[in-house]
Length: 189
Image: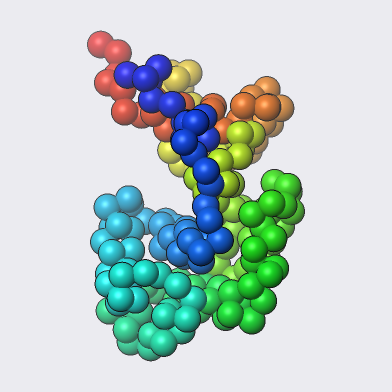
């Protein structure tokens, strides 16, 4: 099963995010923070509906705090998405630039935004830009996958896995992807 599941960045059809989808994709990173995939998908669908079928900065800014709360966004996530929308409206060129910036600059730009941390920046690099060398030990799924791969009794910490980026470079994204996929495999009997 694992060998037949290629990381998206290796798919020959992968093009990366287009600028017109950039705001929606970054908003999704906020929505997905610290939530299960299922819960995040429900909130994302509600936001999409509240925005009339397309999540964009101008539509989000028309929504009230009450509207965003009904969607399921916490106050902190509301603030993050609203501030992001304001930046997209006020300075679209600076946001457009992150599509071609190097990984370090992308991480710096994204983490400078309210509500975006290193994890969000790494997920953006992986899934939206298709970068090939993103080792993501902040992600719990990566740490649990490593635990399962190595047969460890406890989930390793970020600090224990951080140094492995050199070992996995320049294919850190593949290592990250396959550690997630390992979690889908049954435990050996």
